[in-house]
Every structure is written in C-alpha cells, then in structure tokens.
Picture 1 (cartoon, helix red, strand yellow):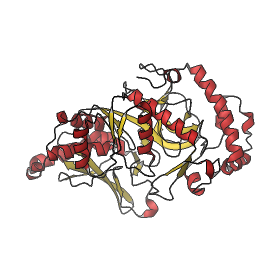
Picture 2 (spheres, one colour; picture 1 turned 120 degrees about the vertical axis):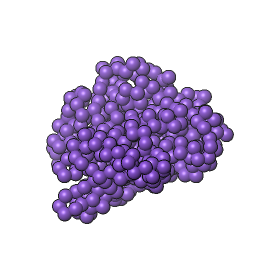
Picture 3 (cartoon, one colour; picture 1 turned 180 degrees about the horizontal axis):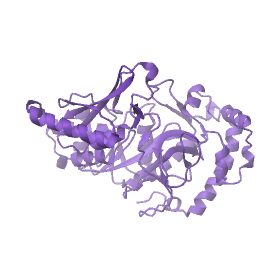
Picture 4 (cartoon, rainbow, N blue to C red; picture 1 turned 135 degrees about the horizontal axis):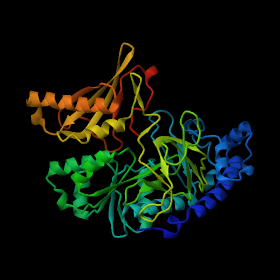
Length: 442
C-alpha cells in the first residue's frame, strides 16, 4: 500500500533534482537564520549560494549533538517563537536535553512522512493501532500518532506502563497493530502469558516497532510470541522524530523519505563520503524543516545505503538496519564490541529468555565484560550439569562472534529489570574517566 504513490515512486533523476533545489534553499536559509551555521560557514569560508551539485554537500560542516547542547534551549531555531507551535526534547540522560521546535508546516510534513512509512509497513485505514510509547517530550508517540491518523487508522493512545491494562485493551478493543519499543513488545508477550491470554485471543497482526535497536533474532522472538508481522522504522528528534525512514513489507532496508531528507554515509574517522553499499556513519540533512533545519547531522548510527529500487515499487534510497553506533561501541581489551552482536547470539538460544544485560568492569588496567542472561525456565537452576553446559555453549558462541572471552552469568527468570521505554542493556561500572559510551541503549 502507498500513501503518496507519485512521491514514493519518483525516478532517481527527479528525486535528485528535488534534493538539489531544496539543498540550495536550505543552506542559504540556515546561513541567514541560524547563528551556528553562519559562524560555521564563515569559519570554513563556505558560501552556500555557490552550491551547484549535490556533491557540493561535502563542503558543508557537520552538525553534532554537542551543537544542540551548546545552543540549549532554542539557539538553533530558525524562526521566532511565535511561529513555533510544538516542542519536543530528548531525555537528556547524558547531558542537557536536545530541544527541537516545529512550525505548522513542519508538523504537516512530519505526519505526511510518517503516513508514508506506516503504509509501507502494511498499516491501513482499517487498523486499530495501540501506541505504547510514552507520551510527552519524546517524539515517538506523537510522531506515529499523527501519521497513523493521517492514514485514517484508529489510534489508541494507551502510552506505556500498566501492561496488564494494555493487554486487556488489546483484547477488548480488537487492536490490530502495536507501536512500541521491541523490548516492551516482549514484555507485553510475557504479561499475556502471566494473565493467561493466548495470542489467538487478540487480533494483533502488525508491529510498528522503533526507538531502540532490534536484531532479526529479536524480531523473530517477538513475532513468535505475539503472532504479528514486525517492521522497523528510523528517526531521531534532532532530525524530526520517527518518519525519516522505515521498512516496507519486503523488509529489505528502510526507505528514506528522500524528498525531505538527504542521507550520506561517511567514514566516521575521516568524514569522507563513502560509496553506495559501503558501511559507515549515517549523516542526514533536512530539506524542508522550517523551525529547526539541520545540515549534515552526524547520527552515530552505522549502516549502509542502496539506491536500487525495491520490489515493493518504491524508488527512494534504503538504509540497512544499523549494526551499531559509534558512541555505544564497547572497547574491551582492544576489541570493538557492539551490543547488537551479542544480542544476535543470545536470541537464538532456546533455553534463555530475550532479556539480558551487559556489565562492563575493570580489573587492574584491563576492562572486562559480563553478559547476564535470563533463563527461560527456573527449573534449569537445579540441573547443574545442563546449566554448566548451557553457560559453556553461550560462552563459546560469544567468543566465536566477538573474538574475546566474556563472563556469562545465568540468572533467574524475570530478574532483569523491565522498562516500558528503552531497555537499559549496558551497565558501566568502570571509573567515570574511562567510560566511553552511553549506558542507555539507543
């Protein structure tokens, strides 16, 4: 299903023509209305009026999360406050929150982008969609909310928390689609088992999951527990919120809304633009934002892009699922480790539940990594031989994938903290001056 078939199936030449026209306007708009960009351009000796081709984007300086924090709260707004009709902000767990503002035109564009993505994932006007993101300053809930309403679906804004009530509403309302984090979808499946509701008793068919990473192995677990087709979507508050890109029913990459966002892949070490298909850091430029336009934002997400048209008929670029982030990479004894690598190993072990924590510590001058894993069945705790065999098997599989040895701890079922929002996967117990990544999964 398409929401705007003409826009979503444009020939590549037409997409790039639109992008160039909008890039020229946006660069000049930023220079004239945002002090940060005027200062950056002047320092780099860059004249935005001289952009002639899309490749000229390489001359534009990058924007970072630190730029948002340094200009907290409204220093990056390009319009006076009387034109701002809504504001959102990040949680600010690692510093001041990043604050973003929207004009009426921005909100219209946002809902349009989101409607395209949920339609591509398989949502229809006949769906009853339960949104289990937390409402508030977080962009996820309202982003999906207005996009789904624009599509014509019925929205149940149940928010997160009180999972038993959430499950009851799913059954009683005939909910057909779920919006949540992957970890909360797993929690919903757990609670359904606890209260005796079988997947066949509810009408869920589609999961529109986001806000945290979801490996294919975790997706399989969710689909098995909730009997629904799961898709992923991508975005972040600095760019707009969700709606930047998202999977279609083919699930072969997340389609960008390229007429509104210009993606690049760069080498995170050098800043050099990488060719199609090569993995690197995703950088995104907004092409239509009025309230808070952003040029070449470094997302920290590691992915690749293909420009090949999709089997679904859409022609916009597709980004592969991010394999990690440049800022949540764990460096353990000189080896780069991403939480997604560990999750891919754990999710295919039938004896364990899909809940885990990574605990980083330090002994002397060396960092160490403990992988805490929940058992699916408490009776395993009494079977020492099988427990030791299971621990050894997980240890071996992790060492094969990561290239280093980790400590594997098997813990009781439901002993790892559950959250309604983003799962807290990493606990960093090293001295603060050595910690190099965020303790909250992205």
